[in-house]
Image (cartoon, rainbow, N blue to C red; front, side):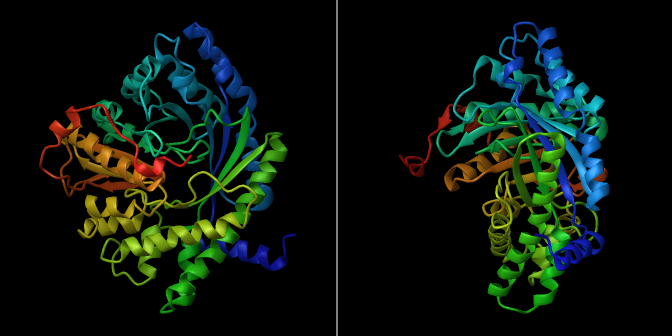
Length: 450
């Protein structure tokens, strides 16, 4: 039962502290759409998505109006495209069909132009990955992802090598927008199947026919709560974050169940991820600074982020019957005003961000690097992040943007939720010989759990 005090508290969080439901994402299985004709498969995909998700935007807007809770995005995730494109001659046609369905329904993004290649690549996987520079540059709403490693399988270094080339080409294909196409592509290790957040969302093969997943955010709410325990021990800090995360997740649970009922689609999960925006007061970096750091990135930042991530998960898991996705704290550089300012002051560098990814929800996210960064260097950064995920049995990811023509110290403007990305330095020394080896980095000892 929802009490009066809970309602008043939620209204304050929405009005003063930028609480929102970041996304209602409908996951749709396309496994039954595979066939031996490009045209037939694209039509089946388009028809199924528009049939099942045709009312998604309308229902989201109705819930937003009826409950007074801002719902920023309505999105769709689908079966990893490589699993259904094996017989297709041109995967770009599938990309265009997915994008057309998303446009006609009116959703913000559709995710799932994806491949799961953590152990090896099939011909279909490789063909789809190689099509990504064209597919993601000629579509507007489509997002893609590739899972290149896992704790169980190790790291597919052939796929890592290929992804450096793909990211580089995608940036060049979208040079007029600062390489923005790369913002729609995530490279994962230990990818999860029910993530509602773009650009990495896909509807995993272990999922059902259709599901409603909700992603809730609220960095401003957490920062506001911590203002009441300034100078207190970390025990109090952790307890305050847990209680706040509980309240935020309850809002997500309510919206998810209502969307499930109105759309007659099973409820999947609530993902409580503190996903920042460029707006002032909606920053994960500012939460860390509220704990006592002068600037995010200084010594102590990794410890503060570890506390935050753990407390968010503990609070969220008690508030919903099904917490999933990634759930924790995101640190996208371009989408967090505190992170942007810290990078511009020279306090956040690529190495520090990599250290922070050991304890956050995802990884090196929305990071712009110089446009002349080589494909091999991009691959090496991806390999480092995949190794963190593999060894620590956690999800890690990379969204790198080698902004064409940009140099260290420049800013690349993306606008909206994507913000602006300060271009940060990469190491000048070559990793080309390392990446050229290919093959597979074996799974770590902790993979042997049976």
